[in-house]
Length: 114
Length: 114
Image: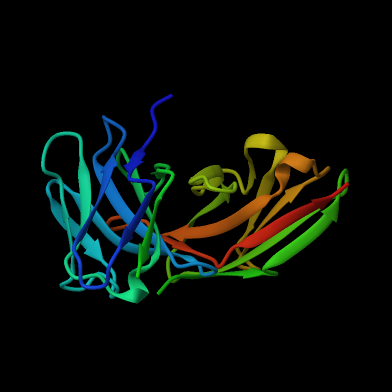
């Protein structure tokens, strides 16, 4: 069964450093998403991406964040200058189309900012 | 804006007992509703979803949920708990337009006692 994959599973970085989190969505999916979950808190939407552009973003997704689909398979989330409060589990998700279509989630990348 | 409230951050039941996880939503438009499960160190897996067909929705692993518009609820139930049901459960709402982002509740950790 196809699945969403994410790398790395755990990323440790120093405050102020740039990080890139990578995701490979399911191959025939058209919509891509990033969510994050700070330890002990709810899963929060960050951004959605369709047709090579951002379709919606949350207040969390400020100028320090960017997303890219550099080729036909990868979907990346970049944080330019990490802060301590960026420490969280970051989930990538994808679906084919439509609000009724299930979003399939990857296993997540745990980002720790020191 | 849409929101989800899950009553009870932690629910504990005995093996074989009824599982009831509560979810109430707020939405200005008829919503799509989802229950996801998260096992330790794994991503989110869809249990079931409501997309305006039958109000009683059956999902995987014996779970079901009933959409009650008058109560703005979408509670998750399972007649007989199994040890393998121990996990974190998230209720989520999605609107019918735009990029269909998911808005999650804070989650309920289900513990099964032998």
